[in-house]
Image 1 (spheres, rainbow, N blue to C red):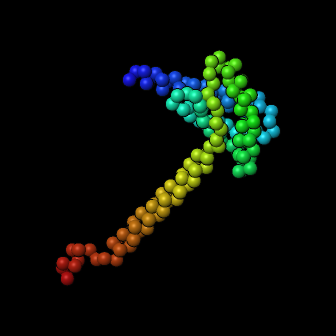
Image 2 (image 1 turned 90 degrees about the vertical axis):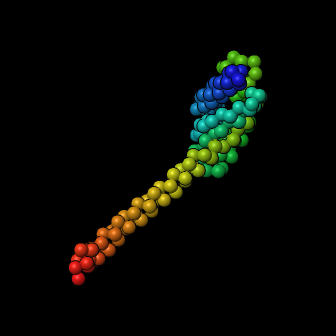
Image 3 (image 1 turned 45 degrees about the vertical axis):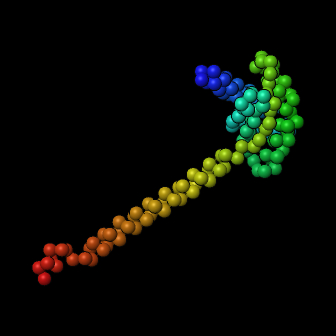
Length: 147
């Protein structure tokens, strides 16, 4: 069991290093005009460490995302060569780039949950107001018994 934990820890460290280094390259070292504003949101390593999926969040529309992926695919060899030099390891995993759509989805979920919460608050407010109104219209129990 300790071997598995060690292997997982190592892969997590490598993934984090890849994320940092590729992010630094995206910020200004890649001169392809198709590579515009974006950042590496996550790196997922394959269990054997032979490949890595790089999730890139792109600021822009679908066309910008497509251009960014094309630019990154074209620069894949350069990126791997730079990673090899920077990290000083024998093997750099095969890189696969993918657009990260989790942020817009997360924002939409937050928006929907906010709507549900507002609706629930409005229902509770109406129920309290209705309870106060019906309570004011009904005679008190002691007055009914005396009649």
